[in-house]
Every structure is written in structure tokens, then in C-alpha cells.
Image (cartoon, rainbow, N blue to C red; front, side, top):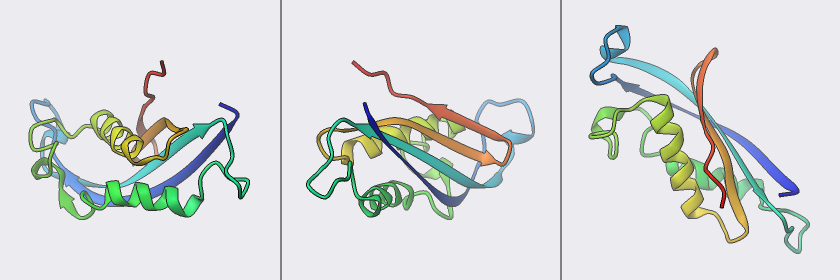
Length: 125
């Protein structure tokens, strides 16, 4: 895919990891930073793959359900362990479902701190 866009967004949320033997099993919070990369082959009539404003709106729509919440009570993390890996995959899937035809998710990286992150890269067919 010759064109790739990249945006970032942030949200604050608490969680605890289930069945984890360590400090993260206890309730704690993060100021999450999310990196979203999308790609496509064709530009629209305005010369853009996708307007950054639209991409930001899509990501904000996905993240708003988590902002200032306890992730363990928000579906799907009421059942799925709210790890950085699972968060990145969920955000990628939700963003992909909202993207216009011809634009796909390349990756989502969920940063839980300045030095710790997990990236999900969907398998392309």
C-alpha cells in the first residue's frame, strides 16, 4: 500500500490484570497513548487517503468508551483480560470496522507508559 497515515490519541483508564502474579494484578491506572496506522492505495479527489479529521474522529469514537473508566467493567474487557495486547487488538478491530472502503488498519500500538507498549498488526490476506 503506497500511502500510510499515522495518528495518536490518549485516554486515561484504570485496570487490573486477572490471574497475574505481580503488582499489575492490583488496581492501577495508565495514561494510555494509542498509535493508529492505516494504509491504502488510492487518494480521493482532494488528494488524500483519508482526512486526518475523519481518522481522528474514528479513533476518538473507539476510545471514548474507555476514557476515565475501569476497563475491567467495560465490554469486552469485563470478560477479556485488559492487557495492552488485547486493547491494541480490540482498537484495531473497531477502527477497521469504521474505515471507508480501500483503507485498512496497518497497526495499533497501545502505550501504557513511556517505555512499555504492545502492537497489534492485523494479518492481511
